[in-house]
Image (tube, rainbow, N blue to C red; front, side, top):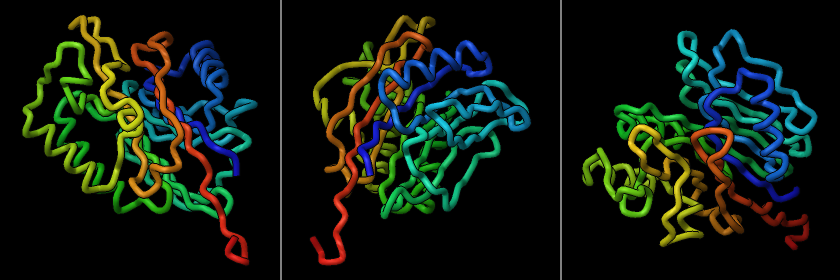
Length: 248
């Protein structure tokens, strides 16, 4: 099994064919294998055909009533993912898929948190993720909250209390999820979102991996804020070594 490059990207709408062409072209240039896309704006009854040459397998969660939500997971045609189970939010806020790649089980969890009461929502959704996950788990998306205001915001401030932020980071730690980008950039102040309203930058977009599989990650980096008001983030995940019948 090849190594995978996981991408998480709030695309701020994908209903336009030209926008889709730009986004997928950028993902191909970054050699992304698995796409976590948020804010696709797809309704349940109107999922477009996204079977492009490179990304041929798709899983969606959309809203019945709103064009402002929607999450999707797309996989490169060279990624031999065999689905075994999935869990979708009826409001288009998350999608979780589980399956096999070669001899290993993977779980991909893509989240798009609301812009109000996001900490409570994230804690509840983490409980669902822990119950659903199996094997090598990648959890990511737009959390709509900067976990560490001192490092993850240009203003060094947060509308959330320190107590609330600590409760969320503790929940992530107890759930054995590790922030991969922060692991590779422990003191770096860099951001994935620019708010024109507030004139400030924040790191709202994350990719986590199950703690016991952190050693499979070789690097993590950010793209640029270009086609959306968010930047994509990437994590490079190596395939685990597989023992042969002789244990070698």
